[in-house]
Image 1 (cartoon, rainbow, N blue to C red):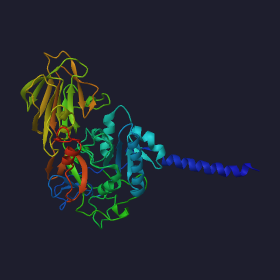
Image 2: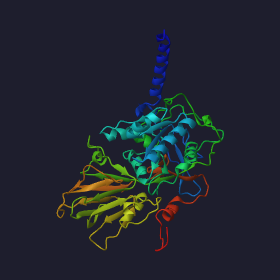
Image 3: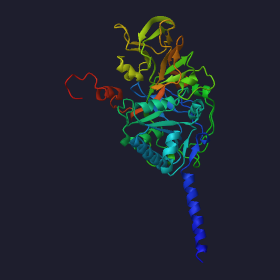
Length: 461
């Protein structure tokens, strides 16, 4: 007589269990709608006919750009500092807030992060395959991600940028400083609600009722030409939704989030193929360059002998350096390893690259600041090198295959230009403030507050 009521109880338990699995599963990134490749425009009062692209307009200061989404972003990639519990908890809190407040936003995670935390998040997350072929994963990410959010320090931002090292168009990056220094990350995590809302609503007018679902319009920008046409589709969780579904007031059409386009380096080599520069192991040979946000470094590594490196500027021989290694950095990377090696500090808006020796056997070899359009070639000399190979690092990650004697690495700055089809190139980093509000320059504040620029001896920092 007790068996009969137990059957409905089991059936009810089974239904609840299956619902939990469905909510907490990891879904394939490929099932998401494709991203809308951004256009960077200097004047958003006259936007192009392509309504599916992101637009950036110059602020009155003429140094930063103002972000304007014609459609709300859908696919948000979250990157955290590895093995850091506070960053993990921050990522969880951020995910729950975004899911509750912006229900049509999809959360994307790295494979290891998704595996660690998906059981504690009551909704599906998306990830990509952690296969040895990183080139495939990068191609999928470049097609799907609308916005990247980082929780960590400067290294976390570089890791996020490196996921798009082979892409011509990098999604905007919103970074929360939770690392040891945080020179690049301008937002504190306690501000995450305001920061994300400012980015999500950027460009939405007070009466805007745009929806996610719009008819497909072919793109004409540079990124679309190389990456392929995109199409919009409903989110995995339901139907259309736009800014009108978000409670509260919009920021207004003149209060877009502020964006700094950070320069990148294009790196190519005769002996270190692109597939080996990506930390995944070789696959099919691809002669196209990869991009670096910070720097490229060649270093003697564990070899006790100095390296002999021939340096060519614009195709003309400059000198042969005898040193531990060489650094070619962007303005962003000028405050990293290059600074520790005596290199110049360069403002991120200066279109340049910095050539810095590492412990040269000379008192007269000084760092050089060159135009970003000037190609720099480093060749490991064949005659004098006792070590047969030097290590190669791109944005702080040592590559599996180094530079062998006789090999060359060619580096040139990625061009950030404004044309009829909009801005192209660089890494769009979201900075503090919005619109024409006159807030402090974050770069100057970082020099004073974090790097303690020109602090006299004996004074406390």
